[in-house]
Structure formats: C-alpha cells, structure tokens
Image (cartoon, rainbow, N blue to C red; front, top):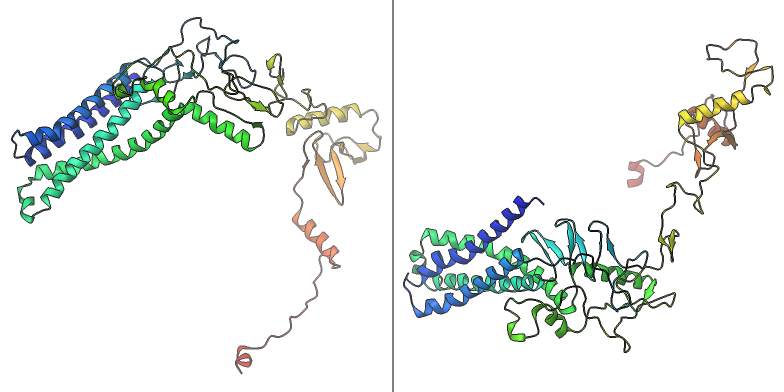
Length: 438
C-alpha cells in the first residue's frame, strides 16, 4: 500500500473515533442535562472520556511503535530448544528477501518489506504490522474500543428511554439532536459488532499464545493429524493461560490495561514442557522426534533429499524417475507434418515404383505413377475406423467422422439396408378418450 493511502486511512479512523466520542457528548448528553455542569454529568462523562483517552493512546502506540526487527547478522542456535525450521529441508528458516535468518515466530511482511518479530498480521487500519512490541497495545486498543462503544450506546439509549417516558419530552429534542442520535447509532453499532467479533478472535489467540499466522499453521497440522500423516502434535508456545497473557500484557495483573513494554527481545520464547523436557515432542509415523514448529509433512515430493534438502530437476519436463519420456512425440500439427515428410523422404528409395509418393491434389502429381499411399505410421486401425495415435501420449486423438457413415453402420447392425426406404411398423391403435370415459 502506498504511504499516502496508509496515512489517509489512519486519519479517517481518527475522525470516526472523534465523531462518535465527542458529537454524542456535545449534541446529545450536554443538552440532556440542561447544558449546565453538574455532578451527575461529570459522573457520567468522566469514565467515558477516560476510556476514549486510553483508546486513543493505545491507537497512537499501535501506529508509531516498531513491531520488531531482526538484528543484523543474527543466526539461530540450532542446539537450543524451540528453534523453527523449514518444512521442506528441516534447516533453520531463512528469508531470501532480507538475506537473513528468521528468529522463532518471525515472518516477512510484503507490505512493510521486512521481517517482523512475532508477526501476527499487517493491519491497514493502523498502517503498521502487529508484532512483538506493539501486540499488547493492539490488544488493549481492541479492549477499549469494545468498552467505549458499549458505554456510548448505553448513554445514547438512556437518553432515548428518558424521552419516551412522557409524550411531551420529544418536543424538547431539537432536530439537530435527533439527527445526531441517528448518526451515532449508524456509526457506533457497526464498529461495535465488527471490532467485537475481531476482539474475540484475538482474545482467544492471547489466551492460547497463538498469532494469526500460527493459527493457520495449527489448522494445517490438525489436517495432517486427521488424515493420519502425523500424530501427537503439540503447539510449543502455549505455556498456560496465565503465562500466555503475562508474556504480552506484563506480569502485573493490575497494569494489564496500562501500556507497557513486553518482556523479552522477540528472538526467543518460552516453550511448553513435555515429559520433563523443555522441547516439545512431535512424533510422525516415522517415529522421529522433531523439536521444532511447524511440524513437517512426511508426504513430501520425491525431489526432497534428507541430506541436501529440496532440489528441483534440471529440466521442467520429467518422466517417472526424472528423465525425459523417449516416446513422447510432438502433437503440434506443423511439427508432425514435418516429421511425416522426413519419414516419406527416408522411405522414398524403398517405395514401390507403382505407388505415387504424392497425393492426387498435389501440383507435381503425375497420372500413371500408381496409387497414392499415405504414410500410416501414426495411424492405427481400431475396429472399422482409423484413429491417429499420438505416440507416447496419454490417449488417442480421434478424428472427426462422417455422420452419414456412422448412420450407415448403425443401420447395418440393425439389419437394415442403408439408402433404402425402411419398413414401417405401425403402432397399435390406442383407445380414444371417449371410449376410455365410457
């Protein structure tokens, strides 16, 4: 996305937040309390403004906080637990775009054009990636959007319920206030429903310590388990609900709603303990233990070498063991005609003198040279028809056949004589409707 469009989207989001937050207070709540400052008004609006302030603060941090970069010349420690490997080769993950190794849970973002630590996804609404250092701010932003929208809808709904207590109350509501009530509902309800559903997804990921990309990997692993390719797959980064939340929001429960810097440097993460070992055990039907994530699919291409890794053949056209099919002939008509002419020239010396090598419609054809004998090396007689065979191919290339000839063969099979009138076999007379009714 172009930087201009990213900044434009961020400004539109800020305008939407400001409209919902402040138009409701100025044009709905303030007239409701008689446009006068009171304790009841402050008790109603102070919590709402606190939620809006925390919402804007976390949104600012999401936009301007770097999600995390891979340090220059970083290399994984393959002897430690929990390093991630490529699915094909089993070697440490390497980014060809950045020309550097990938730490655990790191992925390359095409929008940002760099690798992001613990990448969750690229969010166009904040014009930034969600990664290790701003994932906590993003979770808090979603939480405060849900709470603030719920508080806003409750305030506006209370104003309407108050107006419904007596018929004369609607006479005190101005047209401007009525229009703003409708616009606030139109703007706030879709945001509340959309962000609310999105929040449930990310809260579940927070409880299980799973990013959006890792959720897709877990789905693929579950599919391999369902088809019997691997067994006993355990997600290594799920260390318990409490520790999962603390790894993102901090160890102090009372400060979870306050912006804070996440623990760690994003290059190594705590993994689950399995059978008195820090490394997760992943067993496949080859009975091998793979202390890595994501699990490797054992049903891989025949070109994968366990030592050299995945290698492509020299030629893209392969046959069985990687060689070219020697019986495969070109099916292009021009190339096939060229080959047929070469075959005819090669057999010209062996041809019968009474047989013409040219068809009757050829300009060099001379009468008296005998009958024309076409090259039938590519023809094969099947039953009463002649079919052109593509040598080394998957099947037959069937020529179009005359419809009348097909009809004649069909009539001969029925015992009829083609070209003559057929016997007429009258159908038995059916009873008329009058006879049926009688």
